[in-house]
Image 1 (cartoon, one colour):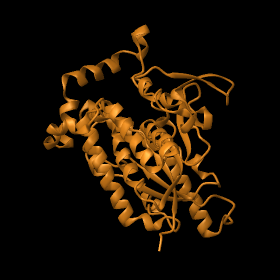
Image 2 (image 1 turned 180 degrees about the vertical axis):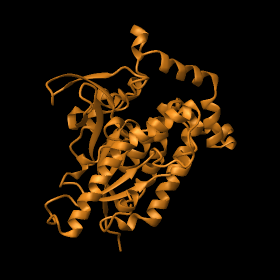
Image 3 (image 1 turned 135 degrees about the horizontal axis):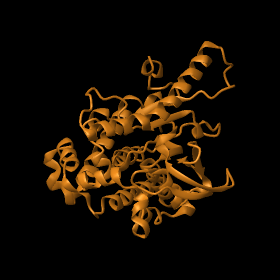
Length: 345
């Protein structure tokens, strides 16, 4: 007897090259024929993963999505085969992360971002993501068929979130979603919501990722968050790099935690009968993450797309998805597998 199809939405976090973890998760989920992805909301690397999955799915189904995700990360890593970096694998991710963090090229680049504006480069400036995002097929990325796809960015002028959807999504929207202001010049786009040209920064400041677009009544009530920024770290950051990294993690997680707190509040009102069922969305939250692994990595491996790190993050994402399919997938359609009340206790 065939399994009943479980319908889900995906919330894809940003985190630079650590988005390779999300690649591994998606690659594994796409192998489950009874799991249907109906909607996606992505920020930064999550937006790139979402665009690759959507365009691949439209052109070639599940295998097309997997192939397109692999193509994306080969582009990011700058290689044609991740096994090219296997000779470094025995060092382990934590050691590799430290080696990159304390290397002279990274130290110099990091220092430059603290002393120089990305506008200092004048005509020599080029956003390195442009060569990648311009290769996407936007007829497929913007196709009306599911999965519905949303991309979040931050409007610089007023600090509000801007969610792009449908034919609004193009190379500029994806670059805007991934625009770290200390590294990239703001991406300027004519915004039909404000009827003027607007500058945009990384969507992680206001929604990492935004969950509210997935509350659409035409979409399922189950949201699977693929989390790549640790919610908790037991150790106190002491070096300048560790402090800055934790500041960024807290900042980029704050918008997600606000939305989760609001969801918990609404669910509690529904369960208590304070709000009539059907008047507000009943959302079920699930999460795929590996905070232990991510807690061992630094900001350096977010910025430097090392092929070995990318390959090992994909493997880790695969394992995390496997654990979700083993332990939590049966909660879909029934209950949240994340205890939101406990999270905010």
